[in-house]
Every structure is written in structure tokens, then in C-alpha cells.
Image (cartoon, rainbow, N blue to C red):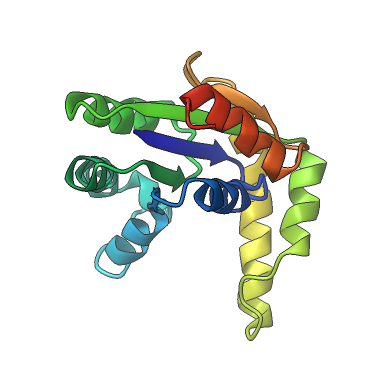
Length: 178
């Protein structure tokens, strides 16, 4: 089974996955951004977003399915995925591979997301890269919130203002591992 943790930048995906991993030590963690980084070192998207590279979507689905089917362990996936067509494509490929997915979206107000983005450091030795990263992430907040409204009804919405431990309890209760 895959537990896909979705949400805008700053919503707490990585923190929640770390909490889940601590509670389910057999779980594997797969961050699809690593596939984007690999592909971005080889090809570029005209939009600048690696999710727009068709190979990213097929490879994310293939790697996720392969990890679940090969290792027979739960897979935790922290990834913002709000383009309706991309959600349909990736989750459709996982369904074809007979891999179950529980899809969660962490909802948080825009001002909370912006404050969290301002409070984290991704490039401590590069102030320009840090500023650029924060600016880019903040520009994604409103489009993400808007597009998240179009996600399938099967997506479980989580209150992003709750602590990660509480959200982990809710997820584990839902998937039957708590």
C-alpha cells in the first residue's frame, strides 16, 4: 500500500512522513522529487516544473509500484501533486499495477503556509538560493490551494493546523495500521 501525503509547500508533508515512518518502521519512504532532480539533470521542461515531464510521471508510478511489489512494505510518499491530469495519470498507473493508494491532502491556510516557508531553511550557505526558493514556494501557494479543490472526492483532507502526531494517528486509524 502507498500512503501519499499531498499538500502545498509548507503544509508539513515531510514532517508528517517522518512521524509516520517512526510509527511504522517497516515503511519505505519515496520522495518523487528525487526523480525530478535526476530528470532535470538530463532534460528540462519548458515550464520549469519537472512534473510537466511525461517521463517523470510514468517513472514515479513505476518506482512506487516497484517498491511496493518488490519489497511488500508500506510506502510513504510526500509529494505535492495537484494537476488533475497528473493525479489521474499516476494513480491510474498504480491502479493498473494493482497497488493500493491512500491519498491524503494536508489543508492549511495560505498565511500559515507562507509563515512555515519563511521559517525553514533549505540553502543555509546560499542566501540567493534561499530567497529564490522561498519566493518560488510562496508563488505556488494560491495555485495549489485552488487546484486542490479539484482533487478526486476519494482524497482524505487533513487539517494542516493540527500537530503531525495527531495527523499520523488519523492516517493510521484510516489505513488500519494504528
